[in-house]
Length: 358
Image 1 (cartoon, rainbow, N blue to C red):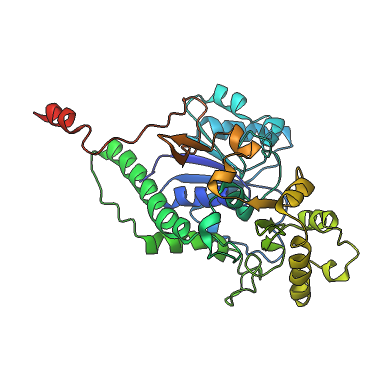
Image 2 (cartoon, rainbow, N blue to C red; image 1 turned 45 degrees about the vertical axis):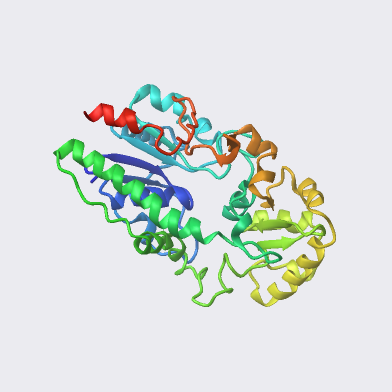
């Protein structure tokens, strides 16, 4: 569907590579710019989420390699990068530079918090983002720790988003060939396809077939905890440096149970201690303690509570239209005005539509 479309991917983690894998699956020529450094220990030579791509190794801190990348971008249709805001600019390949040389390029930026707002340069992970946004709130029965809402994984993620991707691919192909196509967007297909990002960690020993024993669903440093006021806080400090900051901020550096992040034998003790610690103070205390920190700890809000957080409020993520709270359109584009259209009354445009076809 996307034959003739060239996308340059700057090597990163998670969502960015996964998105470019989707584009490669749809037929785009995806060139991934890999770093000179070796893959993480235990990772396979051939990564699932690099499938369908071509690979080039460039050191973007070397002038010659940077020049080569710019030449590639001049012949490309899109760019995908997933660094924190400001990194690409410091490399000399931010939007202002690249779009000046190739005005038609689509510059894709994948981050957790967005390009602006108080948290834009702060670390975080999936559980933190959906906790703060309000998307995690309705995920569990009352009194239980929140988990990822099933509807986001199935109906929306595996269904709606794949239908959107399929429709866009079909429209582009129809413009080129004049031929339409049937888009078979099955939730069972899409939800399985999304597992490829998680499955890509299996070879490194980070994914277990047994629930509760994997890198993301088992550790005490990747879950939600109840606070003294019966609210919830999300913790997901995966990388060692973020984990170290978390343990230090919690005042647990001297606790030997927390000495080895990946020692599963200590996980039950760590979970018990963290459950006790978080239950001693209200949510406001933990928010204040971790504000501005890279320990990857965020509150779990209702959508209504989320709306009033400074980061969410500055980006106008939650808005009210016709007295209904709803999320603003995403993603954002720098050359268009964000407009949230009102919902029509039932039959409001009936006559207008009839008149247009008579």
